[in-house]
Image (tube, rainbow, N blue to C red; front, top):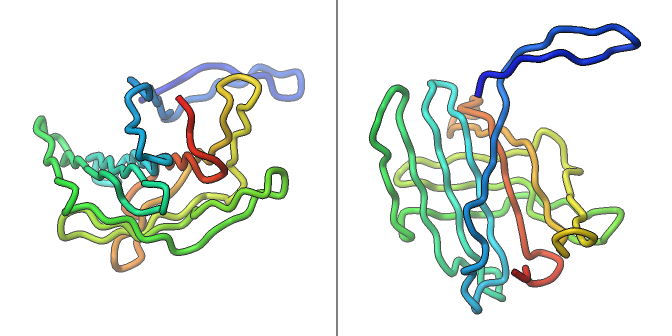
Length: 168
C-alpha cells in the first residue's frame, strides 16, 4: 500500500512516504487438531505481482496441508496451487536468546515448478505475545530470491507453533 505521513525526528517534523504492508488474519479458530502450527509468507514481487504460500505442520513437523497463490503484475486472476505443488524446505535456523525457541528462518520453497529462497532481512524478529494472545512466534520482513539468487520480491514470513503447539 502507498503510505504518507509525518514523523518527529529530533524535534523536527519530517514528511515521509513509501510503501507499507497490511496483514489481516481472517481466522485462526479453525486450525485442525492434528496441526502444530503454520508457516506462511506473503510477498510483493518486483514485477508488481504477488505470491502467497503456506503450510500447516503436523506435530512431527511435516506438511499437514499446503497451498499457494500467485498473481502476475496487472493480472486480475490468481493462479492457485494444490498441496502437492507447494514444498517448504528449511535451510537455516535461528535460536532466540530470550525464549530458546529455534525457528527455521531461511527457506527453499517450491510453488508449482518455480523454486525460491526466502531469507529474513534480520534474524531476530520473534514476537512474544504471551501477555495478549498467549503465544510466541516468529514474524517478520523477508526477501524472496529466484533460482539465480536475484531479489524477486520482499514481504512477510510468519512461523507459528515452534515453541509449543499454537493454541487458538
